[in-house]
Length: 250
Length: 390
Ligand SMILES: Cc1cc2nc3c(=O)[nH]c(=O)nc-3n(C[C@H](O)[C@H](O)[C@H](O)COP(=O)(O)OP(=O)(O)OC[C@H]3O[C@@H](n4cnc5c(N)ncnc54)[C@H](O)[C@@H]3O)c2cc1C
Image (cartoon, rainbow over the protein chains, first blue to last red):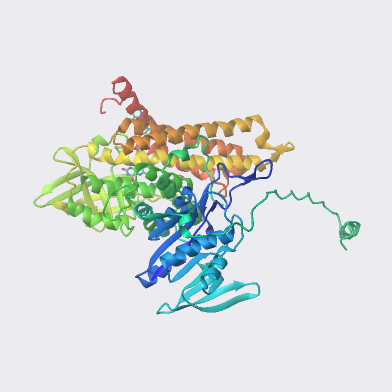
């Protein structure tokens, strides 16, 4: 069995990100990066499937410049077997990334694609769904529990939806997106980190992957949220009611 | 929230990806698994045994050794791992140092193939614990005079003597015991449960309370002759082990200092007195800057020391300088932080008091501050100032 996990290099979750003075770009100087936390859950899930079933290969894939190999190595230090990096510098929109990944999926022919439900940097949450669409595969999003059938022909996935939990049954191959409660990712062990050095990273030029089309959306600017104005203290319920009335809130 | 370590000179750029991965893994472990337990363990005077399994799984035990189930990471990565552990607590780092750099290293460097394959895999897996018995009630700074004896009796040795201040002493499955044998100092592996071998936990410590410390007693304790570490002839053998551990302490101390500095910086930014955060006053800024400056110097020292160790060129005296100065630096940071935090600085919910108390032990063990001064003095003048017995 082969599992493909897509992952993105994103700024560390509590990094303080500044916007360049003209609002044209993010200032990512001195920012540390990590594997997008939701993708890390997907890696962990793949490793658990591997540990439970034995004969499973876990391949991690990322689209990006050379730096994102650090995150691929992180995933291999956790236990993934090998990595594929689609080389690209600069911006791509979600559909272009999904097309690139679909081309990788066609080459790798995995039984299952796992990904995070969204990337914490832009929070688009579009790529895996588009990937499933392009491949014509079933998908399950916001997964908090994944069970593969014994013969690996299908999966039962518990998805977190607004009203509660929804159980979805789908046939493989499929795309499943990890949500926060799916598992608790392991720490990369020191021997794992040493082994990761020797695991292969294949690099593909994005131009090898066929026509990705032109971008249909692009980021035009950034603006920081304004600070909330400070609150006021009121002395009594009457004052509160009066203050709310003055602001026409009641 | 992941800890943001001060890195004023952008030293992170000089670490390899692999070294940074090791640091980030251990940092997460300390943050999420160890720090929630440590203050209570310190209060109870208890070593958190429940963390041994997880530390072993991470590969922290004997991490810098090759083979036998050890991770085989380089000296800089090992240093960074210990730095993170000691950011949590010196007691936790002490456990790992004694298990790996003293106990396992003694077997690794001085043992037979049989001894290595019998002990190292289980010690790396945390299934067995080892301690290192050099210090005695009457021989601390001057171990060359130690009095524990090993006498040959047929195909056995008979051990007699007492050890004191032995980290992991009451939880160890096997002890490396240093004893006089045929006129020179030699190492022996003594298993717990061997008749004539016992330990007493040393209670009442106000420092390193998350670490187990014990006295060991050997009374006509008979062990088979193949329990001797064959390559140990003379004081140089235990000193080789101490060098490994001192190297790790040099890094560890920086972790404790960084924990204190971050706490002081955070606190000073939010504590308002006389209408402004105390970090806006020059005297407080000076304390913070002194800490940052000292930490930066120690970080540089560690990194250079690590690269020297990597190339095999490091001298023991260079390790002495780093152990001596980094621990003194960390202790000063802990005291300064205690001061910046005012009354809160004496409370358990802040870290500086715990680090301050721990670092008093770290200053003393593995060669006191002053003993390292004498080692360095001897090195630069060629004159030994240890006194007659030295
Ligand atoms: C928590 C803890 C854990 C420990 N763990 C271990 C362990 O696992 N294994 C082990 O073998 N040991 C261990 N030790 C022992 C430690 O290594 C010794 O305490 C240390 O070597 C100092 O010895 P001492 O305490 O006997 O002090 P002493 O040697 O009596 O020194 C007392 C003072 O005299 C000074 N002094 C001594 N000689 C000279 C001199 N010639 N010139 C100037 N000043 C001098 C010292 O610097 C010090 O300030 C541990 C100690 C502690 C506190």
